[in-house]
Every structure is written in C-alpha cells, then in structure tokens.
Amino acid sequence: MSPQIQARLDTVNGVFSTVVVTSAGPSGLDVHRLAAWLGAHDAITVTLIAGGRSNLTYHVVVDGEDLVLRRPPLGHVLATAHDMGREFRVISALASTAVPVPAAIRFCSDESVLGAPFYLMRRVPGTVFRDRSQTDTLGAAGRRSLAFAMMDTLASLHQVDYRHVGLDDFGRPDGFVARQVNRWNAQLDRSRSRPLPLVDALRDRLAATIPATSGPGAIVHGDYRLDNLIVAPDGHGIRAVLDWEMATLGDPLTDLGLLLTYWDVLGGGAAGEAAGAVSTALGPAAGFPNGNELISRYVASGGVDVGPLDWHVALGCFKLAVIAEGIYYRYTLGQTVGDGFERFAEMAGPLADHGLTALTSVEA
Image (cartoon, rainbow, N blue to C red):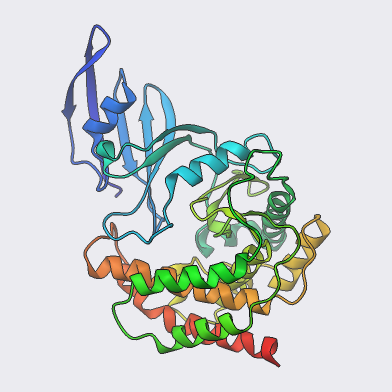
C-alpha cells in the first residue's frame, strides 16, 4: 500500500495556524511545510506514487484540486540530473504545442520547504502502461495502435520550433552527442561503487566513434518510453508525456536510440530477466511491433530523417547502464524509497555488452 498522509488545516483570519497529522507521511515530503507553502484552507492528502525509480512523485489533493508533485530523489543526486526547474520550464513551454503535457501549476526553488526544489502540475487522468498484465488486454490491434501513437507523439515533439516556444537557451545542439558521452561518463564516476570494465570499454568506443550531429537540433526528451506516457482510458491516444527532467536541445536521434534500447534490447529480452529492474520490458516480446516498424511510423509522421541508429542505441545502452548504477549506488547508501532496487546491480553488464555489439557495425 502506498504511504499516505492526511492533515486538517485550520485557519484564523486566513492565516495558516495548525496541522493535525492523522497518519505517517510518505518519505521525502514534509506535509506540514508543504501545507504552509501552499496556504491550503482545507484537508490535504498526499500519496507516494509507485513506479518511479528516480525522482519522487506524489499525488496531492488540496482544496479540491487534483495535483501531482515532483521532487528529486533522497540523498546522492547526480550533477545536472533531477533538475526540477528545467522540467517545469519545458512542460510550461510545450503547453501551447501539439505535444500533450500536464498543466504546470507552481515551482518552488526554496529548499527549506521540502529539502529540494519541487513543482506541482495538474493530474492527468489515464493509464500508465507498465507491464504485460495491462497491455495484453489491448489485443494485437490495440498494442499496435498504442505503439504508433507513441511514435506520432515523439515526432510531434521533434517538430516543435524551440525558438517559437521560448526555449532558445535550453541547450546547445552543436556538439551535443560528444557532450552526452562526457556527461554520462562523469555521472558514472560519481556513482562508482565497484569495477565496471564493460561499461568503461563501451564509453571508450563511443568516444572514438562519435557521429556528426543530425540537423539543426530539436527539443529532446531524454527518457522517452512507453511508461513515461499517460494513455487515454480506452488505450487509444496519448494524454500526456511525463518525466522531462533530462530534456534539453540536442540531436533527436538520441531519443530514438534510447527508445530502441528500451524497446528492442530490454523489451526484446536481449538483456535477460534483469531487464525488469530498469524497464517494464514492453516491446516485441510483449506482442508490440518491433523497432524498425516504430522508426518507419516516426518517419511517416514527419519525424527527422534517420539513418543507421546503431551508435545511438549504443549510447542508450551506456546511458541506461549509468542510470542503473546511480540508482544502485543510492540503494547501497540507504537512500531509496521502495523495494527492488538491489536488482539494478544486474543491469550494467548486459547493457554494456549489447552496446558494444551494436558498435561493431559502426566500426566495420
């Protein structure tokens, strides 16, 4: 059961005065401070939302409003990751576009409130598909329709004119992929708790084979996958794209390469049973179209021109290996909330091995 808290806020002349806590609060959120910051005038209910392995996400009901709160993880936080201000800014900017995003409500940079920056957005009704028990009910046609809607939405994102929505300074497309290799190597060094020779070998080969940046650049989500989408209750249509913490301006092929890593490497079973630690493993093995069909749909929907994506898949493998190590490192320090984090120790090797295999065709 998700941890839940309720507090009754009493006001005198409109000024916050008392909070009566009726049950233990969820980790990472002080309901007293949140209530005071919100200036709430009625009961506030906060529930930790299960499913996330990085940032902490809570369902907040206050004064009749149905909201979601996002804050960084506890303890060890990788530099430049978990940036709530960037996440709030990009969903605010995309509100006027064809990309479905939750309505941004309020951002707090004052760390004295919850111990870290956080923001609130409006809760979007719908379904987040995390495992086969959900998607098997869609049938073959429903799964195909959902996969194609996912690609149509990604194509819409990459078509957004970032200058028009005020994101000119949101990143630097030139030299983006080279900086990605350097960035994730730096993240890895900050999370090292054991030798990782395969991951180091993948990093070195990526650095030696960096391709040219594709086109003028686009808004890049940075972690685009099926379980970061809210789907309409009937399984057709994307209601909202979530988890924008890694968004920037860069090469859109990196979104495609990472998606194929989730889809064909983890979702195709290539990384073994350990895939469930870092991904829902929804992909061809769960009855969805394969990665080639997804890319064809993306191109048909007006996405950027794509060529061979093997290098970008290898980069996706490296990125996921580093993310898994960062999460595992927080687990070893006792800074995770929930169960199953020990399994992240199993992910780096299989991901790095697949990435090295993908680079073989690049170097041939």
